[in-house]
Image (cartoon, rainbow, N blue to C red; front, side, top):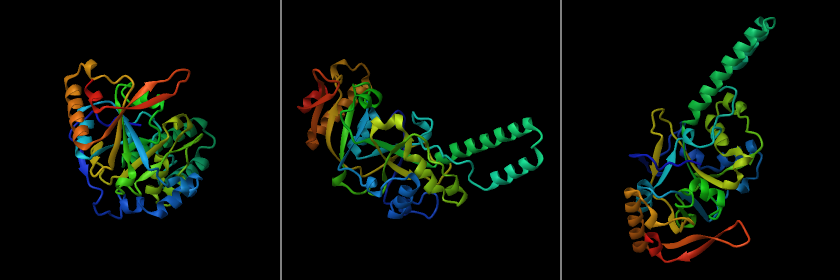
Length: 306
């Protein structure tokens, strides 16, 4: 998962934009056909693509985060900025049939020279990696979890338990229908070479964007994935019309009075005002006896400034 909130001036994208039949074909991404193909490629039941009623986003307190909350926006990031080096990495040996032609020449001319053989294979691998890294930059992704009380999530993404977790009510707004994908956890990545050779680049990218190593399974992740056609698109974009915020959970170590950063304190004040004006319920994490689980108790909104 990323931390997309430590930058300024993102591009704002409306999901009502008319889709183009190109790399950024949002209409295809939202289609049942897309999910059918992905379920076949990855080897999962299509039912797993049905989103839950709520999703959670962990974050530290920041100016950008609070601005997004107030303005009904959600930030998406270039997956090359994520903390998993294999996140959305195109697992294909090449995106054309050129590789097979090169290998054919290699077999004919270099069978007697092992050093040239190894050198050629190394160069091919570098080309494949370069293409994979370039193609992954054609996606913008934001990440959620189905769990609000995971101790690792609070430690890694919730500002070391000093941040917040936002619960989004997906039943309040269906604008994300078709753009939400579950992350599937596997021992090995999905090889999408055949899809690339067939010119099905978008399908290949989506498959690689929703399959992650099993070590990340604790994240219980769902993603909004938007394909971007422009090669010079910014690393971060905002999408508008976010679902309604159902509640905000404060981390176990969230304490306004101990904040030393001026911008952080001002952001907390704005968050407090927004919560009061919109009647959003506030909860706070607690420690529990005789277990490593995290408790969550409802508290007064004034806790934001306590």
